[in-house]
Image (cartoon, rainbow, N blue to C red; front, side, top):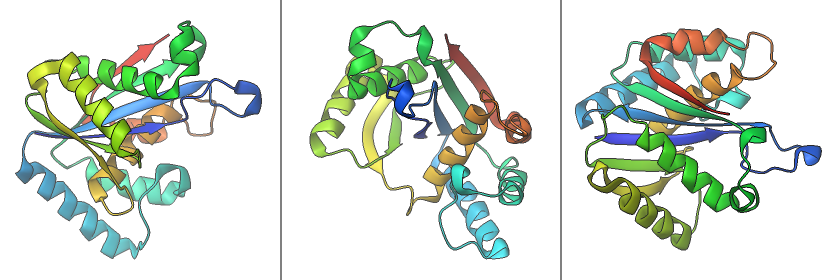
Length: 201
């Protein structure tokens, strides 16, 4: 089992300095390597058709590109689970001031609300966290989630099309929580692949 995790928004609480009041965290789940490989091929073929040379990134994509992407991947064999955090509902001083703890806590909560699907999952998380952060996160998740986790590693979305898929999915889901034009458009396109969206706050 392969799980790819990405976020939308920042974990900070400095709202007067631009921190987003909504934080989204999502995981794309593949039951096996064959499903992951099939999805990766579909994204590669789409890239050729669209002549798209850079990474697929929700925040930097046009509406047309988003449409084409979700029209393609909605037919692929994966599921998406997400948590949406309304930061104003979070009162823990520790989580409001320690961004690593905030991130780790909601990764754990996201994976704990898995509907019983995770089993010895290989977890890949977008980011460039150093070895200490990666080691601490790995230990934390394995301690909290036990046999549901096999290992946790950081991944580079620029080189990983499946991590780009995770970015696009959580971007679509989180946008639906914001006051934006066509805010639910891409979440609705992705709906057949969404297993659950859990709201905190």
